[in-house]
Image (tube, rainbow, N blue to C red; front, side, top):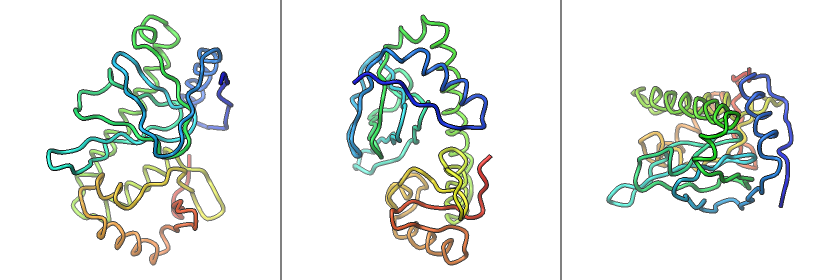
Length: 213
């Protein structure tokens, strides 16, 4: 399938510029469409770019416990050249349209290099934010901060607040925040009782106090 990414409204000029670069550079490339829950093959010397959808990056410890490394949304890159973590896996959280490009192709083309710089900077800011929230002592504070980060990065304004487009399981959240699934479930209930968030029937979280810039 050959397709062109469709423009979306976004007030962030960096995102607009990156989206335009993607559209101008990739309109003749094939998009790879993967169903939710699909592993993304991480090819040596190749980088994936998310056009639509959401992918999670994970690793696992010696005892088999999974750790969530981060989330990758539209206009963001991931792949073997961008990580030294081993093992390193990518799994789609929703139906995804992805582009796979050679690393040498990205670095030799000025427009693609600029797009990669913008996209990598966005990922870097997310990693810093995740590291900062992990320094908070209370799990409730970490969970609240994480939902605020997701609302800012991947949220859509709705009548109740900001609806987070990505759906993570309670175990995903536990892996990311360094706690247990039971504790995550309990504190989501606390935040819901406080009226700070709402969990829709579709399992999407709406942060009622957030305002998407």
